Length: 148
Image (cartoon, rainbow, N blue to C red; front, side, top):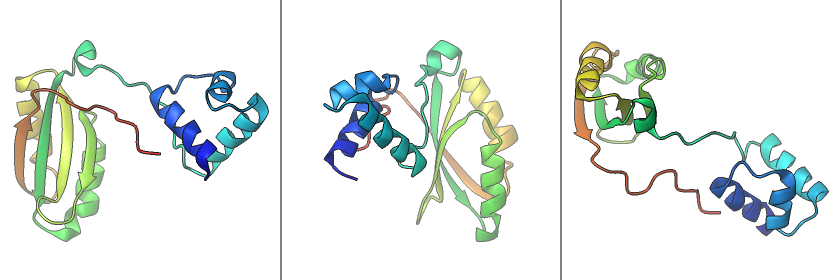
């Protein structure tokens, strides 16, 4: 990966809907070499996909909660993660070293919806020992591009 590839990544992270022609102009290449580089970044897995960033409140999921989850046994990891992946309101999850075992971001319509989700689904996942919830007041940095 060279400086031009890094520049392509930086531009796409800021504006993922550019055409190849627009992207080529931004990185000062002609369209064909830019397109080849873009295809190689996709083929090699550097670019894993493209997606829209949706305003949760606009689609009825503006209530966000961060959960710290501790599981009671290492043998429950696969079952816990499979169960977590099946819950649509879980928008982000990370497994950690140390305590807690996971940080999870959940988006629901409101506090009542979150309480129901927490009590009926999240707390019943295999291996859950402890759930600690923190309500998100305000996002400061959202979808910041990775450094290139």
